[in-house]
Image 1 (tube, rainbow, N blue to C red):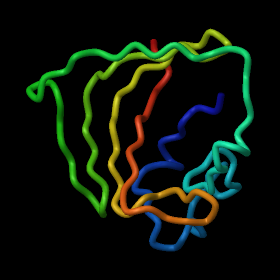
Image 2 (image 1 turned 180 degrees about the vertical axis):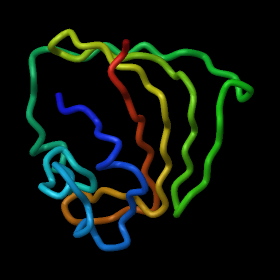
Image 3 (image 1 turned 135 degrees about the vertical axis):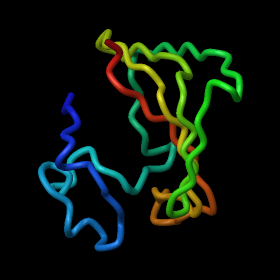
Length: 119
């Protein structure tokens, strides 16, 4: 799993459509936005990830609006990946319009849950 590098991720945006990104971001590996397959083209796996979500009150969240994206920052729960790694949900991001596409079609809105390695 690649780790985030402050130099590569500080102050990012989509103004130059990724041409000004640095490090592995410019290579496009594990980088948004992507074109998602339909459910029929998705790959089945034997193991399921385990999600555990917390009840969070609005007092425990921070809301940030920037460039068509609402960030909700807090501690929302964990996921255990299929290899046993544990990640913590730290942000919910709402993009308008959607950041990703499905078969080339962009939708009006997209919700993302951003996880970091749990320490």
